[in-house]
Length: 82
Image 1 (spheres, rainbow, N blue to C red):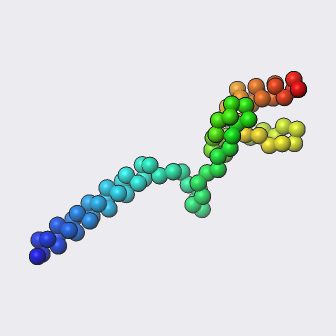
Image 2 (tube, rainbow, N blue to C red):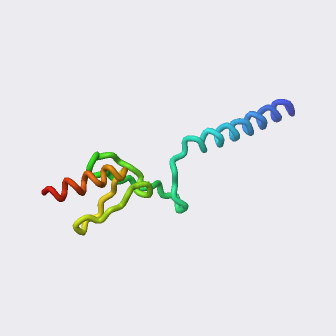
Image 3 (spheres, rainbow, N blue to C red):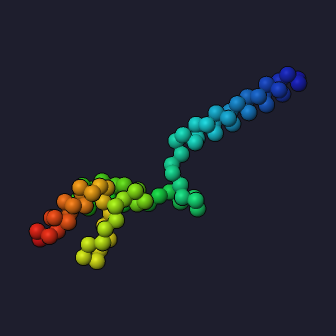
């Protein structure tokens, strides 16, 4: 009976260790308050990117988020043509 109890406890301990190791690999990035980062869309290439990684630019009073400097420059050039 004691042997069975030891085996069950070892199996539970091993399960917890494996679960914690695998959970930390695939967990999404979270802010300190537990909120997952907000996604924003680049108006030029339509790519979604995390808001904290985006390049922010205010153009004609409107706030835009870009995935790269190239998309930002293309968007500004196209908006000046209009």
